[in-house]
Image (cartoon, rainbow, N blue to C red; front, side, top):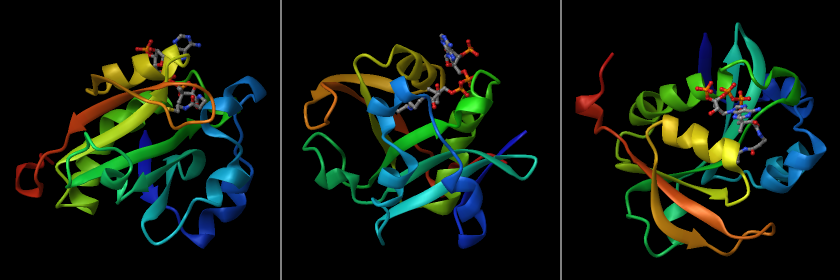
Length: 163
Ligand SMILES: CC(C)(COP(=O)(O)OP(=O)(O)OC[C@H]1O[C@@H](n2cnc3c(N)ncnc32)[C@H](O)[C@@H]1OP(=O)(O)O)[C@@H](O)C(=O)NCCC(=O)NCCS
């Protein structure tokens, strides 16, 4: 079963060992590039299976600054990936399905979760649709690898979270 946790220094050695296939790097970059994005507002998270780190993502708490269409009380999901050796085992789907409850607890004021996914990344788009995201039918043109779909998923207010 997949667990999501805020990344701590304890995870660092495992996180540095994560990687995606070379042809997937255009979608998320390298782990070194991703780790350089972390700051007080862009927070790292790990995806764990039996206490082993298998994946990673960033939560951008000021994502609304990135795009006009984004609602103010929103979070952004960025750099979401499962490490190459652990792909195809259902971990991404489990993590995406677990994310709304986790985020509603960790960020109780957030109403929506946004992300952008490269138009050539059909596997990831399909994953997000299965995880309850909708395509806003708007494109983001700011990425280095071509246009990206902007997708959104509503988050429950903390009082609505089901345990
Ligand atoms: C996209 C990614 C996160 C999927 O991770 P994963 O753990 O392999 O995915 P899962 O095994 O949980 O599969 C989830 C869904 O993805 C799709 N999928 C996964 N691998 C697939 C493949 N090889 N071919 C087609 N669809 C695939 C399927 O829709 C699958 O759903 P299903 O199990 O109901 O068929 C992973 O490929 C990855 O890290 N890619 C590189 C980074 C990236 O592109 N991140 C997204 C940035 S927006």
